[in-house]
Image (cartoon, rainbow, N blue to C red; front, top):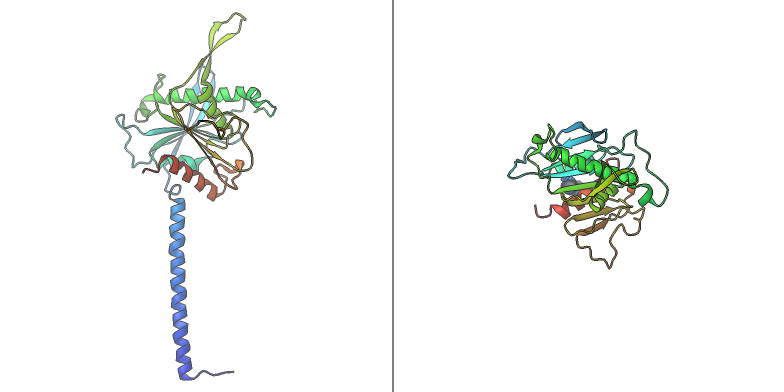
Length: 302
C-alpha cells in the first residue's frame, strides 16, 4: 500500500476540498436552473386554483337538465358591470366529463375569466354515430349541443329572465370564447357556422313543426383542441385558434387550405401529441404546451 508523504497528503486534501467545492457549486447551479425551468413551464397552470361550483340548470323548453361547472376568476380580479370580466364556455370531448379539463379552466381563472364547463351528453341521448357521412349522421348531436350552448349563454347573461342572471352582471357575455375538445370543438364550430334551431308550435304545410334558424352574434373567439369534423368559422369577426394533435387528420375543409384567405384562423400542431390526451388525463408536458399556446395567442401583451 502506497503511503502519502505530508506534502502529498496536504496536496491531496487541497485537491479533494476544491473538488467537493466544485461539485457543490455544480449541484447548486443545477438546482437553480431546474427550479427556473420548472417555474417557467408551469407558472401558467400551477397557481392555487379557485374552488369551482357545480350546478344543474333546467332547460324547460327541451325538458333537459344540464350539468355545468363554474370556475370563477381569481379573487385578485375585480369584475364590475363597467369593467366586466371575460367568459369562456367549455365543451368536452365525447365520452369525457365537462370537469375533465381543469387545467384549462384553472388557466382562464388565473387570467380573470369566468369558465362555464358544460356537460352535453346525457344518459337519455342517442350515441354519437360512427357512420359516414358525419355531417349528416352527427348533425343531430352537434345541433343539440349548439342549442345547449346558446341556452347556457342566455341563462347566465340575463337575456332570459332567470333568478341566477343578476349574479353574473359583472361578466361580458357579448364577446364570449368557446373552447372545445374533439366533439366539443365540433359543437362550438357548429354554433358559429349554423347557429341555433328552435321548433315553433306553428305547423308547416306538411304538418310538421316549423324550425327556424338563428345566427348568434356573441362569439368573439373559438379555441378547438383537435376537433376533426366541422369546418372552422371563416367569419373575420371571430378569432379562431385550433390546436392540433399529431395522430389523426381533420376531415377535408375543416381547416383552411394553404391558398385560402383565413387571416382570422391560427392552426398550431403539437408534435407527438395524441388526440385522446388533450384533457386532464394527458401528460403534463402536453397540458403545459396547450396553455402556453393559448397564452401566446391571446395574452402575450400581458
